[in-house]
Image (tube, rainbow, N blue to C red; front, side):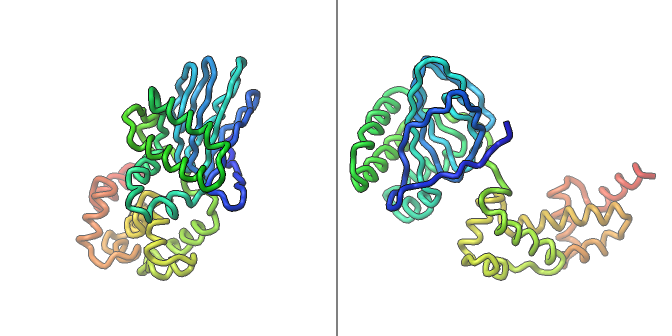
Length: 283
């Protein structure tokens, strides 16, 4: 029952994949970078998306965001079950949707999909009909059909968010080496002046692309992450009975007042109060 990363292969020259899987007797708790639209038809079943576990009757239409853990929707269904799964390439949102202003509503939909979205009513009926039609179209017409489906979903009010918080797999996606390089750089330079331009170059990204990538992976800016790292290092030093002023400069801050302000913001108390409270407990 360990979570698995699903490796998805696409036909050359196609931006998405549409197929009908069947895994009734397999517990496939998994995630993948590709955004996925799933239609499942059965008398009843269980949906497990992120932290949400709920049931459905007759059918369900779900949009599942990038790297959101989910269980195969036909798991343990003993009655007749049909599925249609549409998976979009990993770069679909960034390269095909972001650059085109007319796709702004679709962009918002796909960005919101990390919560897991369940569609009902007329929206579900219309989209399912169009999904069946996609199977018989050529590459260009099927792509236009997909855009039309996404626009319908983006405009729909017949939608329910399955999760109230971010449940995406973070830190160890398909990019362990790049994130590992970033962490190593921060660990080696947090007490100096970590330079976003240098680390961006080290991982072969432009600075703007690196900032977007880092924010996507960590939900923090590079500066916020470095400051958080510094504060955590400062806590360790304070617990070793180091002087607050010395700790401030040891972890890379140039202003004692700024260090005190940031420490209180992250920890909820000043460095002096933190040190006094925890060292007194040790004594």
